[in-house]
Length: 247
Image 1: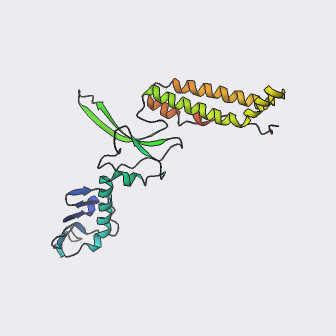
Image 2 (image 1 turned 45 degrees about the vertical axis):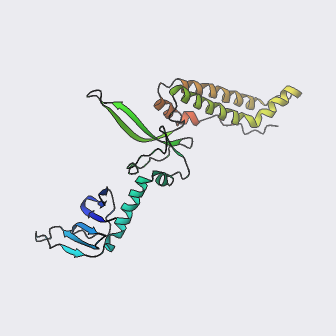
């Protein structure tokens, strides 16, 4: 870099014309209005705010930016993340969770890493970056609205495809719950040893719940509504299996 400008009052650092907002100025002299420095000539100047007497102290010549290195390093890192979003989002909690997009290539375009992803709402969701084109109320002007979406299904899916995805997840959950006791049903068929009533009742409740959850998913009129349902207690809640041993 060549030109460094630090504006403490605005929490701003400008590196070769690339402005970074929101940089912490903790530890910076509160009387400073601006710092300007040229790394090529190793020279710069510090401007000050009015003092208690209402006067502006004379500018101070400097030959180093060491007192503000923390702010410069912070801004440098933010700029790096802007240019390399994959690096930034690989550190977003939960670590290792894929960050996907409806568009081709890596999802986050430059200058989007200032938008902090919201906390993951439920374990069955994946973080997506969405660019949506909308028509403004004032006329046929199309604009792009960008943002994060935690989705329980691949967000690029159509509504019908998303419903199929969620229904498959519902059926998979029901299958996983029923599987450990399937052997008792086979035993009843082969040896006529009946499945205990509480277990057969519970198994029917699981099947009924799967049907009800499927109906609720299919009744959603939008992907947004489906996503809300797929993260709800109703979606996750299943009847608890009996405590009586299945023998």
